[in-house]
Image 1 (cartoon, chains in turn blue, yellow):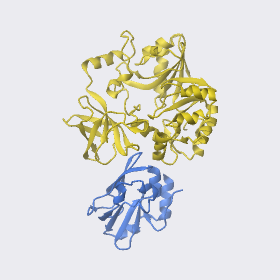
Image 2 (tube, each protein chain N blue to C red):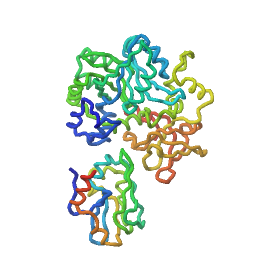
Image 3 (cartoon, rainbow over the protein chains, first blue to last red):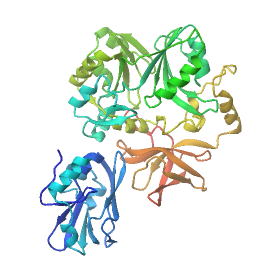
Image 4 (cartoon, one colour):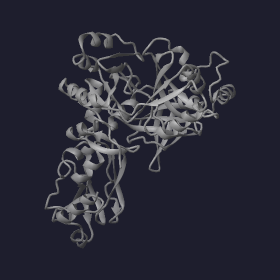
Length: 129
Length: 366
């Protein structure tokens, strides 16, 4: 059974979102997603200052198996990316909610966070896979 | 309903992530594909390859029939247990499947074919044996097959076998098999490491599996099998060659035996014509110089603008870089700079000779 922390919000496309309570959010992929994808071998994080719309492709995770897009869960501006992932993509497997975070967004609409899935709703999505 | 090998319960016990592989429920990995890959390069691993087709070709015409059916010449095999690798071709020279053929006796050859091509292979073989009283085709679905691979593989299996059989196994040359303790053991594999492939009755497979695990051998899934064989530069049917490509265009020219000239195997005329005219595309290794991962079907561009395509591509766990087998214009040679299109960007790659890795060591300059 995958780990689905209660303090995070989730998307149907398996990103997690941590509201930093300062107008920014930290984003990564869920434990369930990393488990489905398998060992990570390459991660492409978004460029800083890029303006993204919610639902837009903005990062790529490549596992031994396949390449998968990661989508921006919120509209806003990219203000940070996890540089460690360039040399240590396995952090996404080992610690998906911590060291394996992928990027930070300064979001434009706090309402978008409230509309994301909570942990129990996301657990139902996991069960559909 | 997916088919199960005799080792299915062992896979579940070992915590396998199971996937549908050509209608078989098979282990993709048992936790980490990368760890499994390194285990085979550095120690020893065991793969369940019981889904592959084992077919016994028997009868007084067996040799002559196989000589007409495959591009390598089974007449080279004269000692019991000796094997060769070959392609079975269409009249056009396209590859129907790649296979290993063991010589058992003058009127008995054992053929190992891919699981994914089972139905079309059998249809082709049955059609060509039809009306020939001196050929009998006998599928052996009751047999299981385990591949034990890695630098410690021979020691590990040797610790399980009777001392006498263990000695014989250690003395086997590559592509040579022997029989004993109810097992057929060949010094073959699909990883670029030393090791054996063991064919044995399905009901004895779980016992051998457990003995191997107890001897320190780790279970390895089909995921690592693919990255291991790619590093070893070994072709995968369906990715690197199929009925639309000939062995000459697939880096498998070495498996075609041209002499004697009067051996008329299916596809020979087409191959001979292609050889005389010169091939226009060939297989080459690629090493990605930029960051990213090469995948099958990505477009390749050579320095002079020629175009090709990646057949098999992946991350190479041993090299820590991305590698591929690609079919490119025939003028591309090792050392040439190429470009590969990854998500709309053209990234730098270098053409290299493969294998990329043999016996745990890199064979290319990074």
